[in-house]
Amino acid sequence: MSIVKEEEIWPNAYDIFSEAHEAIDAFVKYYNADRIHSALGCRRPGEVKEHASMEPDLRCYHHPEREAASQCDHCGDYLCAECVK
Image: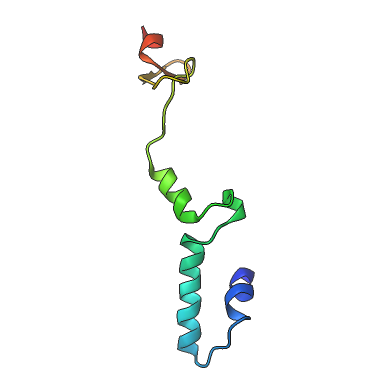
C-alpha cells in the first residue's frame, strides 16, 4: 500500500473523490501489469505471466541439446529418443 501512497496519492492533488478513485484504480492496474518489479527480476508482471503460461522447453537430462521425447517413470528425468531406447 505504501507504493500507492508514495507514487500516486501523495504527489497528486485530487479535487473530488471520484477523480482520486479513478487515478488510484489506473495506478493499481499499471502496477499489476506494467510496472517493473525487483522481486520479479526487474521484469513486468505481464512478462512473467506470459512466460509462465507458455509450455516448458523440455530438454533431455543427459543431452540438453536435444528435445525430450518422454519422462522416465522411475526417476522422473526427461529423456531424448536415443536415451529411451
